[in-house]
Amino acid sequence: MKLANKYESDADLLKRLKNNEEKALEILMEKYYVLLCRFCYGFINAKTDCEEIVADIFFGLWVNRKKEYIHTSLKSYLFMAVKNNALKQIRKTKVANQQLEEVANTSIEKSANAFENLIFQETEIEMEKLIQTLPIKRRKIFQLNRKEHLSSKQIAEILNISEKTVMNQLRLADKQLKEILKLKSVI
Image 1: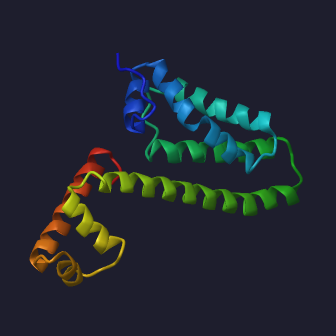
Image 2 (image 1 turned 90 degrees about the vertical axis):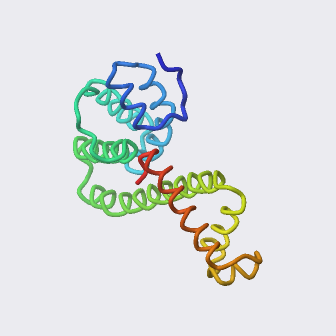
């Protein structure tokens, strides 16, 4: 049995979940429970209702673990499930139409923006970690090109190397990063 590692990829945790490993569900809950509750709170201002909705999502994930029903990333699925269940909860409690419209229009927009920002920040952090795995010279060339927006010619002049070397190093950096991303199922 695999040791618990909260840094395992979601894809690996889903595989373990399909193999009836309860520990995988525990790791997923550790990883996403608080984030999902906060996200849900953007729709429903009742902490216990939010916790119940999120718990139901994880319960459903466990009950349906053998089915192939997640066709996006697990994180996207969880956030969409919370949003949908929160909206169902609002309808069930017969909130006034005005409040429902307000929640549907403003909270979804704010939550969607917050979710997009969260995904963007996490992706930036992950990309920075991947860039740090490049060999030092290649990393320097890559950063000058992508972060400082310098041309191959400018980089060649700064580092006192040929422009062709710069272009080769950029190509190799792109190839290496794409391979790592494919392995992580990010692309």
